[in-house]
Image 1 (tube, rainbow, N blue to C red):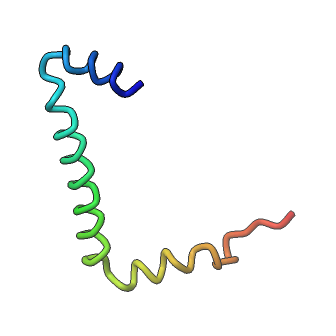
Image 2 (cartoon, helix red, strand yellow; image 1 turned 30 degrees about the horizontal axis):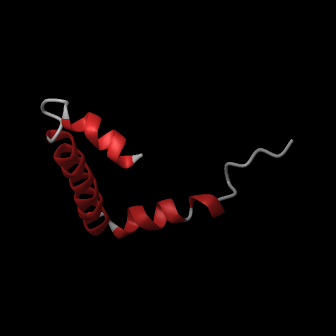
Length: 61
């Protein structure tokens, strides 16, 4: 099965750039996420982490 797919993909001109682009997008996303996690303020992290436990906005009818 893989040999069948590989044979067709080898005939497409310029297809070798797509794995490089995919890897670059993957790396940039996780590098950005890593940067955001380490530069986020502690107050914001605490506020967001307590949101599921906050009962002030619950409407009980």
